[in-house]
Length: 196
Image (tube, rainbow, N blue to C red; front, side, top):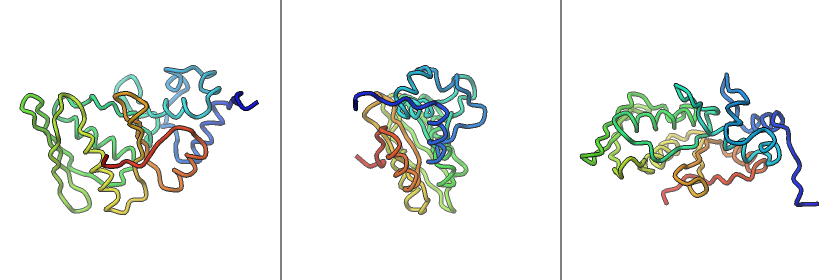
């Protein structure tokens, strides 16, 4: 009966996800994974719910990621100075510091409608002017970061789903081989990050 799904134990899912590079960070417990769906729900819909849960951050300070290469990025996150610097730091965490950014600084003034982020990478200095739209993230910062990965010939690329999660973009960083393995394992739709 094709309409019946086979349950997969949480531990087995975590083991298979680790094989494609998705490993929980130290100290992450089952309680963090079952914040929105309980164990039974995660096991009855193998991989989908668990992968989404792994993209979250700890509820308490310092709000560290549950799994570095996955990120449920809430676009409504640009409130003041430091916000874009935090985004770039999280992208570096996502990709295992693949772009090798240093000296990250930013300026965010919503009232003056001015925002920029500056940093150094591989011997060059960058300053990106960013569009201000209330407290919404300018998605070009993600695209430009991914362009840096391509130009530096980094092994990883960013994949995203901007359609299924409301104001949240689900981001992941994979090598091409990891992405192929991920696609065989999971029905979570992640596409290469693009300019459109």
